[in-house]
Amino acid sequence: MAELLIMLAIALYVMSYRMQTGEGVYNSATGLWQTVYNKYAPYSYKAVQEKSRKLGVEYSAKEYVSQVIILGGGFMFISYFYFYSIPMSIIYGIAAVLFVPYLAYLRNMKAYSEFIFEQIQTYCSTVINEFNTTQSFVKAMEGCRDSGVLEDPVLSDVSTMINLSYQNGTIDEAVEWFNAKYPYYMVKNMHQLFLQITKEGAQDSGESLENMMNDIDLLVEGVYRDKMDRVTSHGKFVGFGFALYFLVILVKLLLGDSYQKMLSLYYVQLLLHGVIWMNSYFLISGEKFYNEDTGVE
Image (cartoon, rainbow, N blue to C red; front, side):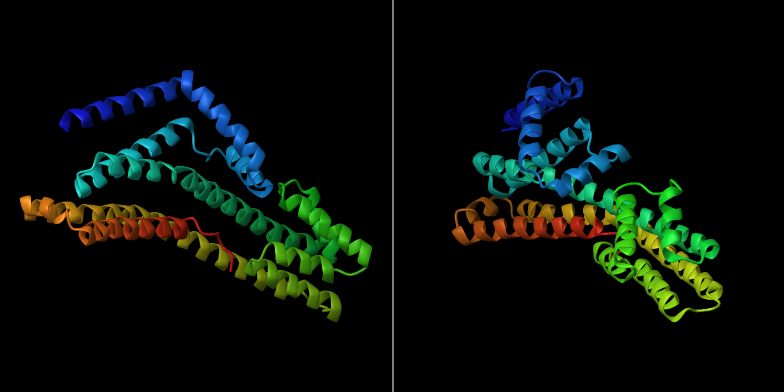
């Protein structure tokens, strides 16, 4: 068995080297994957992936290879020492590798969410500053649109708001549409303030807008503090999650030969499968939480 593990390690190393040089099988597999992805992936996620690529946070080939080696090899190692079964070890290794695209998806969604949040923060701050000069919400949005500080899709959506406002002669529908698409506290609060100013004709809005800017600053500070807290705890969480897998291996070492005899019992094998599934669910749920939307209700 030691020889088999050594041969497996050598095979993984060769695959890693080939993928780093971008030759042979890797190019063919990548081309096939990209063809299937372009055909079946949702348009919304294609836009997310494209923006992640521009932001430079999309998984590189080496990162994909690293994920495959770490997850696939790790779960093959763990499951073998759970069951002493090569077929079972291969099955768990393949199952783990199948989650690599999902991890890439979570990473892209996190980066895109952070990008959108920063754009929304810029939109709110710029519109408030523009309103102090123009005293018109629509003109303030036009100033924000033309300032060059926004990027798509927020830039296009602000243009849509402006068009809706001119078409309807009121900002109500435009505000409702934008609030539904970007359900951030700062957006809803700012738009509510502008609706109040527009309808009630507030004479002195300067103090209210200044308070709104302070509220935005406090909200942004809270969001970024939460982000730093997540980063700090993420590494500890992953380490703890993987440590749970090795508890059974520790039990195996303590039981010695008795452990192999217990494996002949079907309910013991079911229990071991349950341990792997529950720990895996725990890790996946934690990764999803870590990559949750930034600043959204």
